[in-house]
Image (cartoon, rainbow, N blue to C red; front, side, top):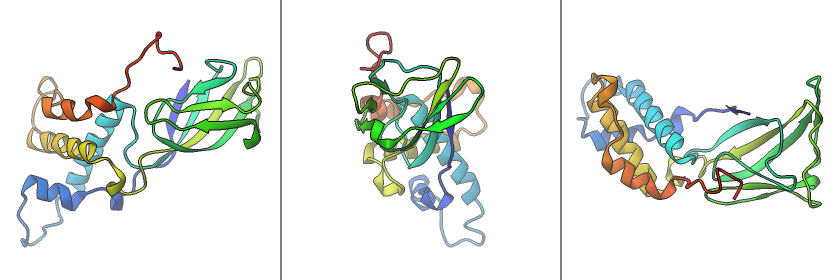
Length: 198
């Protein structure tokens, strides 16, 4: 199983100006934008940490997920949420040759926690022996920062500020702050049935 992020969030989609306001950084000084790349890095780090904790993609990105078997013959829970579209499904044989699956053979059940790929005819296409399947999908709340839920956006600001203010801290001092954990708690997946597809 392998999950690859195929696109990255452009710098123009990151709330650098809002982050400056959150940090109460002064404006009007010469070279006021010199810190922008540093602030952008802290925002990206905070977004990545919150996405890892919640399984939610904040700003839209394209992913490729490779698996060796379906979890269930008729359905496959997808690893991230929210997912707006499954853009391609391919079957890969034992020699690594991929063949596209018709979009008519599957459908996406959207869900804020566990989106599911269903077989349109009652079962998903059979994966070749010693082969696998590749699923490409678009995940995220939207392409702009304004699409991110406000509480998750606030959590990003708080965590990025924590990283910024504690940038010289040792690894043992960089635990996620309680306020951030509280804000993201309702977005975290609760695994049931041993991590099954439900």
